[in-house]
Image 1 (cartoon, rainbow, N blue to C red):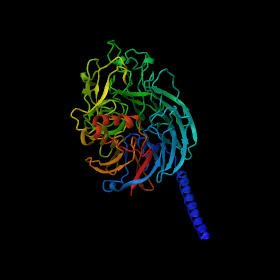
Image 2: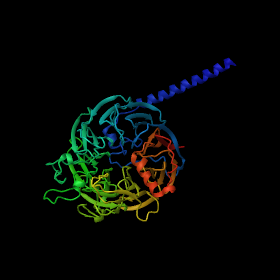
Image 3: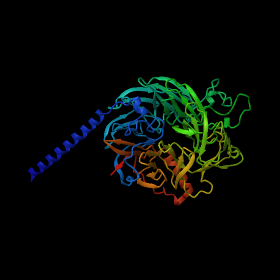
Image 4: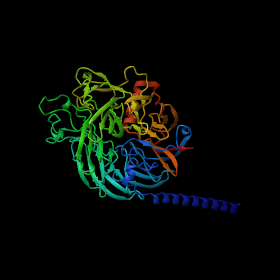
Length: 582
């Protein structure tokens, strides 16, 4: 009996060793076959790769893979799940040659076998700093380029995770700042440079963008998103001194057009709205506050500002126009033009010529009541008089400063010229102003409120026909979507929702074809990739920002009370979740 047990144990141990040897060999093989990412691949990636934040330089968030389609999506099952660290994030996994790279929280970067979730290497940057959510990383050559929480940009060796270079983004020190500088957006690699936007919430002198040499990490140029006095745009700040100007954070990644060699960034507004509320009435001076709420087109090599377009001057409502700039070819007045599309929280899209910044047209999703008219030639917007902050009354304005569309990006199917946008239909009682500062320095009171005549549904997916600017189908439900949209060549549109669900829609009519319980809040950027001829869908859960973990949930609790579907919401914990056909 004892001898038999020894034989059984020996066999089990031998099988385990064989398994481990095979698994290690597969891991080594996966890394050994990892090719360098070329400029050509970033411009035209392999269908199975997801190399950039929204997969391609045009920020469309579309995968051409179509193994998973309308006919078989019901067979989609969880393929693997990898536990992650606690903390806020807005993560985007990247995949190249079957290897997945992810910047998790606490300044940890991991490389995984994209078919199994097996960890290939881990890099922990220390010391870390204030926990700031980050959107992602970048790939180029044999490097993984990573922004950290303590204002450094790192280049790691893709096959080993070893440090190649480490650059500190220098910043000024100011007293009594509410939040530190941070690097929330993913870097952009273009024309031999690494471009990195800087968030400077309520920090004097505002945000900026740095251009780093790709090979060394050294800073080559810096573009300030707050116009300086005595420089172009410097007279648009009501004569405020530089130290009294703030805002213009650059916290969403750029898009890039290789043909035009232009990088397109969006900028945030300022929270210090009181000094800008009214014009001084002086000739040559305005309160437009450049370059806040603008699209800025830069040369990656030099940081030269080629053109800009300010979508919303003097934003008194915190309705950012900072989000993704998507590049697509559209027929405008019968002529095919390359355009840049973008919308702020109002979900009011402006269409600009990608080469020149010329205003072409706009289309409105229909949830806002702040802009009443738009000049068809210039794009200048007429503001509802009731929206102007005052000390006497409050008005129902839509959307809420934390609702409408937010950082979860839209997706474009370039073949169908359809755009899919996630929305939260929440408004605000805005006003009156006071002498006590709130989020905005006018002291204006802001309180979440349902839309007039609300039916209790606050989540919406809106499909938009880009050929016409007309609204196509929409899907509405109680809980808002909280992830970016993902569209695929299989005719599907994916999104994650506040109640832990991951949903696949029919791209043509918005019918739900499949859904899955993720176990936690999916506030991240879903991707689709392929490995060994098999298609996968991946997203991060359980690392929500304060906006999704607290703010949106509090709105639903206030509006719905005991009927709130999130009362008994469970949380399985942070994880990277990957799906494939069963």
